[in-house]
Amino acid sequence: MTAIPFRMADTTSRLVGWIACGLLAVAFIVIASTSQAFAHAALIKTDPADGAVLAQAPAQFSLTFSEPVSPLVLTLVKPDGTPVALTSFRLSDQTVEVDNPQALKSGTHVLSWRVISADGHPVGGSLLFSVGAPSEPPVVSEAVDWPQRSAIWIGKVLLYAGLFLGVGGAFALAWLAGDGRAGQRFVMAAILFGLVAAPLSLGFQGLDALGAPLSHLAQPVIWRNGLGTSFGWTVLVALIALGLGLLSLAGPRVAAKPFALAGLAGVGVALAASGHASAAEPQWLTRPMVFVHGAGIAFWAGALVPLGLALKHRTTDAVGFLRRFSRAILPAVAMLAVAGIVLAVIQVQTPSALIGTAYGRLLLVKLVLLIFLFTLAAINRWRLTASAEAGSTEVQRRLTRSIGAEMLIVLAIFGVAAGWRFTPPPRALAIAAAQPVSIHIHTLQAMADLSITPGHAGPVAASMVIMTGDFGPLDAKEVTLVLSKPDSGIEPLKRAATKPGDGSWRVDNLVIPIPGRWTVRLDILVSDFEIVKIEAPVDIRP
Image (cartoon, rainbow, N blue to C red):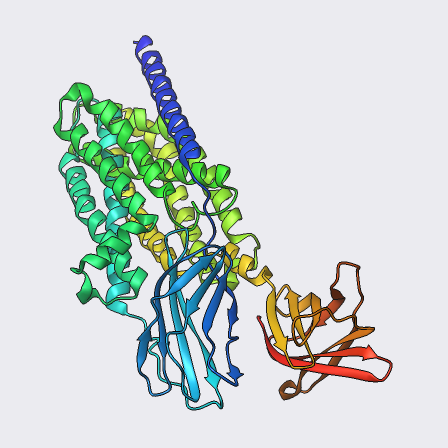
């Protein structure tokens, strides 16, 4: 009798070892096969500047982002509201240069843009500029397409259910349930839901990328754009993982364990292929952490329904299932928690971002749900499991109800995680905030390229390159930077620039107190008897 628990412990140890080796091997594959990825893109500079008033129509527009992007939809809206599609553009590092196909009449125009980030998420916005004199800006709808957004959210929740409950459930049945088959119908249903949700999510991604309504789902261009994003890889790998999970259930029993293990690894690879967290730097850390986090969730969540039903129906191997799960779950949860903490620190960066950003607030909701989940799991593990293994019928019923509560919390967490699609992480917002704002000031007498770093309110540094009006060198004797914002009642900020020796002029230790549109003026002392003053508006971010 004493040898049986020893053999069970030995079997569990080998099981955990196989799982760890499999996860580690696939993690190295993910690291080796990953090309460089970037953060969620943010617009940092435009030409013309937002709100600029131009003497004549520009020959081209330029949009500079915090990372390389791929344009999806570029539209110019005329003062009378007529949209003009802009199809001629070039990519230069992080800048999109867009040709203006026609002469523009006087009035205020809107340049609307939509691009795709390297993390697979589309980003859009618009800027206003006027030719000649400002007019009433054309109306550009910024209403949220709730049917489209709801479809994207539902598709992600169902895909999570297929991967975590379906593929994870197939793993639990193959590796932990012994000869028991309780919950197999639920697991197969979850996998089938995932097989439907995965391609639909790809179509929804295409709708999101192009900003198209749900009624356009059948158009081929929608699916091509969805497949062309990094999320396309997630869907392809997810379909393979779901197929492997289904084979482990319906195929020969001898192949069930290898198929199930490969499917569990596929869940981690699918999640690591796209998304905010997987695209964060450093790549050597974030992608493996997403892999471990996803595989850990599938291992834990997938076992809940089969285990709960086995205990409820008191199947012959229910106690063995419980014993194997309770011994294997501790290292799995430990890896899951470590990966989650690492990813949260990378994404959020500062405690204030937990409250100050939508992403952080969603994370707080998830953390609260996790506290409840871990509390229930701890009670199950250390107060109920031993009595349930000993055969107490009442404790088994209590454990079944508690597992049901865990399942509801897990589903709520899926819903919260799906909401992250619509919220850029604080990490990406910080990258955008750290970018400089740059303007070009051009007059007949002189011109300058001015950069203010970082381009938001607070301590900044300004760098200026001074030239003549025809782009020749200008050997100025002195340069003074003047920043003013009369509408806020702030007196002009004047700072003498220094010349560090690289051909530029610089102002350090400058504090811009509030965000908004400022007027920047450069007083350039050309000689003892001549001062040239040039100015332009500059937008300082919050």
